[in-house]
Length: 129
Image 1: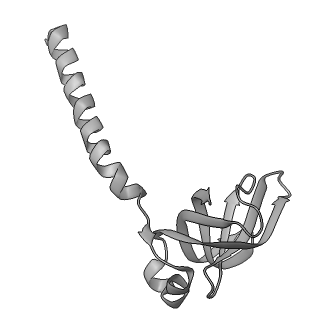
Image 2: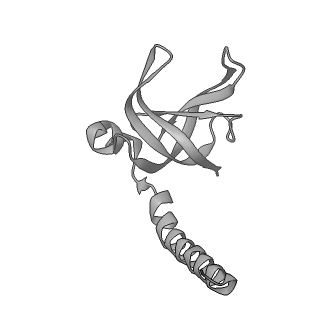
């Protein structure tokens, strides 16, 4: 039978190991591929499912509420070339015409409730400039 000190030591060791692992792993997981809307659209298969970081001007901003009552927004983000659609739940952090930097997951084809969306980034974080 283990003594209580051994149990505490083992649990502490496991906690420290998990903390170290996540401290080293999370920054690598969270960083998106720094790219442009034009590059993503030209190589959609390569970026499908990847977390990407892009910057550009916000156009065609549309805030709405779904039939289920969930607030969401969409807008196009472009850097002078083809635009890419951005989607996220909540209120839009940037206004029409603002410059934004977006980190999110690109999906070439996404099906939701019988609707199909093409070449869209679901924003994980947005910074307005």
